[in-house]
Image 1: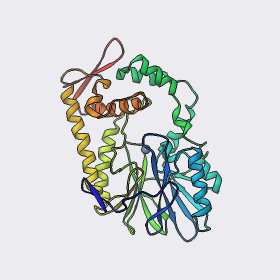
Image 2: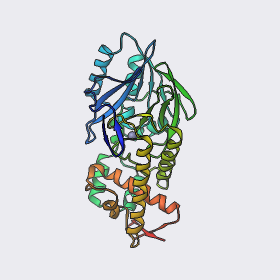
Image 3: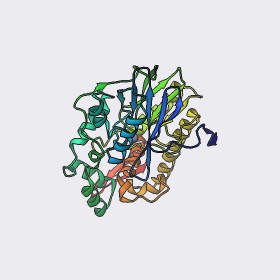
Length: 344
Ligand SMILES: [Zn+2]
């Protein structure tokens, strides 16, 4: 057992890519590669008497498909996959849902908002960047070069996703699913994704957290151009507080990135405190009017390169919108179309 920041990591080594590792009765940890600086995702395999449930799929790459094929060939004890659950709409989680459903003749279990939003975002793939998105980044104050790079890369979301199943089964907060012969309660979190499914098994005291609770990274909480006035940071902070009430302090957390861990309540508190600290920094910086892009150094330790620009603008805007909603900041627009924020 190793520990940092009061968290405990009962399994010090993650399993090799594509090799399932038991973490609780009937519950297996499966790691898959990602072609990003975040280079892996954790997926979950749950075995019962008649078959397997898969929770999350990995991204649509040939490397992930090959690893899945090895799992199907070697690790299923001659039982079929009979259920597929996806926690939320991001390509590393939903990327191979269509392919796994086709392979096993399955229906996809997903929240309604994330299924629908995924279908909408995929329909943008191959189209030019919309005017609403361009003016969103202009209001944030990004340079013409950055805007050109954004336009050139637009539509990347759908590239990581195999064609989605054309229908699905809606799952929602308060319902439950049977997996690994146990009852798992569905708890929906918000802020990172619109309607993120987490799964809590009281009998095993295990919590499948998705990206709603990660041990070492703070999940991205972003405003996106389709809903520029949204307040996802409020959703996120409310969800963190809700989870502190809903899941036991001693639960084993199975996160989508990093190691499985104990210390859910401490980690949730640390996430809340981190955002609160950022909000104080922004209010301080905005004593003098600032644009979104002027505030990156207050929120991020590393320099913001083009590949993470939309995440940085989105996360900064989430903090700004939170403060505007609290009447602590006001915005005015200059003749270049950029918004300047000042503390009230
Ligand atoms: Zn995610």
